[in-house]
Image 1 (cartoon, one colour):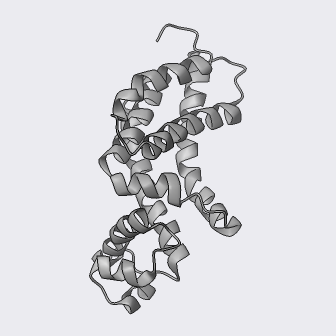
Image 2 (image 1 turned 135 degrees about the vertical axis):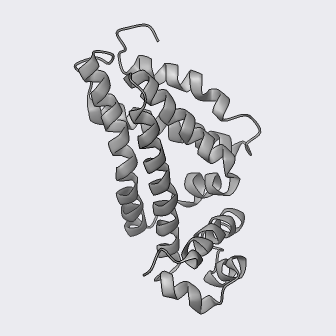
Amino acid sequence: MNRTKPKYMQIIDAAVIVIAENGYHQSQVSKIAKQAGVADGTIYLYFKNKEDILVSLFQEKLGSFVETIQDEIHAKSTAADKLQTLIEKHFFQLAADHHLAVVTQLELRQSNKELRQRINEVLKGYLIVVDEIIKTGIESGEFSKDIDVRLARQMIFGTIDETVTTWVMNEQKYDLVSLTPKVHQLLVRGCGVTQPV
């Protein structure tokens, strides 16, 4: 599979729109092909099936997000600032792409066990970034020394994720990015911050 070809990203971007508008189960490969402006058969040059398209789109979108966020986080000196950047950029990316927000928050939550495992595999890169922020905070003394890193990671990711899901379920009627300071304050305090935020 040659992922450098422009048609690969064309299909990915089309899949985001089709799946967001029709739901994963109602999104036939032919609909995705039509949206992408390619023949049905072209899809199979890049993807095995519809499930592969869903996992690949998550891989592409999350992968590029993780790369971008790592650069921005490295530029920040404190763990609290790194965490704020993560929250803000996560909210900003999904607020800027209505279709992607629907796909990541609703359509990726499939009950198919194998599909969930593949999606969780993709998520690992993001969770490593969260772990690095927590460990930085522990080492600098910003976060409590006896914090459970795995639990803190679940709390941070779970809070960010649920905040976005609630926003999607409310049909994005309010400004998601403006919630960054409140979410940040809750999470930093939850990590047992030892200095004022």
